[in-house]
Image (cartoon, rainbow, N blue to C red; front, top):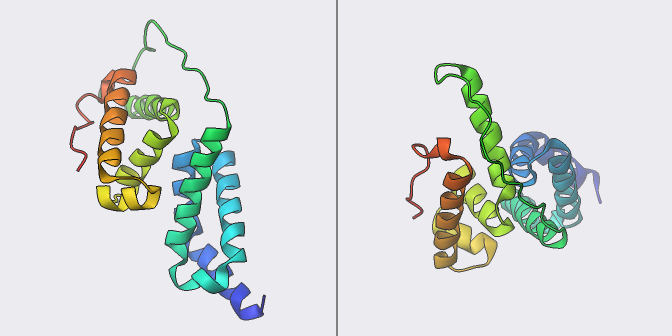
Length: 171
């Protein structure tokens, strides 16, 4: 590839790389997995850069979502380990409570099926509409709505402390 294309690609990565890494982290659930996921997506994008450079970010995001869902399908799911009692929580006024809640939420998100996790990431982290999410995932609007509803319900079961924070609105 020519120097101009390399420069454009490098500028794109420098400008949007951190945002894309946050999306990859939300999908992968850990830093190393996110870095691998983003690196693979950027490698695929680089190979097609002359065709996509005007619309690169949506293309890379689509690669991230599709690669992560494909990876979930290929790996056997980690079994859920039920516990009789949730760990003690810090007081409501303590900032440690927020950290505890975030960790519980992260673990609960990791326990969701791949499609539900992808739907929640697109809808609530990426703030996409139901229609945009359906288009990106290649499914129907009703599928997105039902997967979001099931995922939110499951999150409420796994993390009861979220009860006041998670709403039913999925459209």
